[in-house]
Image (cartoon, rainbow, N blue to C red):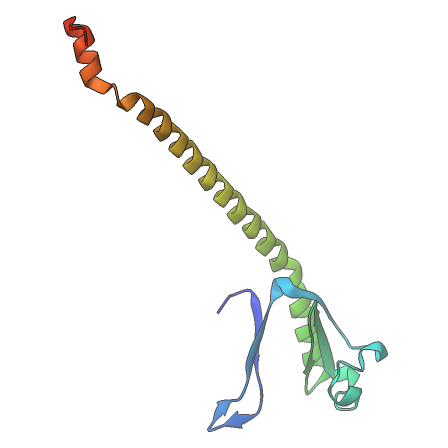
Length: 141
């Protein structure tokens, strides 16, 4: 499991195992907030199944996920924790990604230089030591 993701399971059980396990990477999350009236389409049963003071909405580019809590203080703790996690970890994720990309570019550049250097060496390898030895011995080839 990626340490920078939100993971949850369905409360429904089959053979004492959760039915569905889903997750979202933190860097995909655009917002974590309390649902508004405009979000009723994303809420279960058009908003009738979730009291807004007991729900949070996680918004990504592709989906909206609703989490329902038993108590408002529990919901507030989760809301705060998720917002802080996103604020802290997403910049770290992007910095790590930039570093990986930079390292990969550097590796490619080093490999290209190495191949270029080997190509230049190959041009001179044909004459090599035998040619040098003839010159030093004064033998005309």
